[in-house]
Image (cartoon, rainbow, N blue to C red; front, side, top):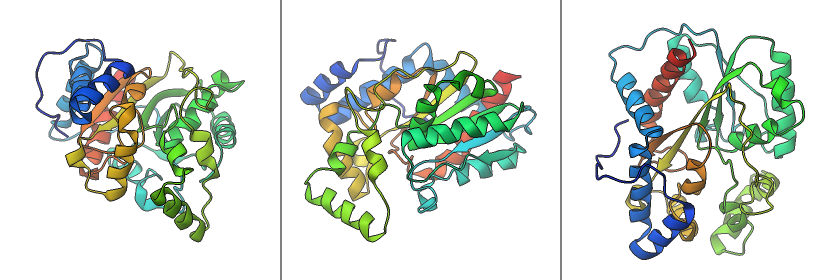
Length: 305
């Protein structure tokens, strides 16, 4: 879980999306990705948090869970049909269980729309009772939580949510939604594959990127929720999967990306950011994620005591 050894001084303010696009066009996408990554590490907000997580991860044995709160998974798309993707949060739940932290999962519709799943989240939280909750959302699950927070009555439903670990959440949509609906030969093949598997991609329309899209609004995060966002910062050399390389290439005109998210937008979200050098949208390689989740949970336990 070590951070990449880049230590050149950079400005404390994170560069804007426009600045990163200009840099990528001039010096290449890898240079722009490196600059943004350095900026996060040197940020007076995110840098100390990253170092704190690194310190916690080096402890010989993590302390047992002593926080009066449960970890609740908000799964990603196709989590029932394709659990091997990690979208069901099984890996996260396993690490929480080792600490003694109780876990649960909100039974979202695997290919549900944002509004359908937002309603499920709100109903589930209302029925939960008074026990504190830490949410852990994965990919599209982050978008579902964002929309849930924007619904009437959200303040009451989220009153017992004390923390939120946002794992590669599609908070502002993804440019890959438009690509998936394009006439690109690969996109046509992907759509055909999902049709053969009888899997609907209709929910991808909800994940459109840009002005006027369903996710084109500021996240209304309540002040009492400690939000942590985890995202990968891959260079082209890190992408060994053909689909990942193609997605990264499609998104390159928009600047640094993890093959699904525009990193400048992701880093503009409220809360704290933990960047993973060399990881893609699915946080591959996943060998580091277990240790990271333990450290993040211990951090929240210490902060929320």
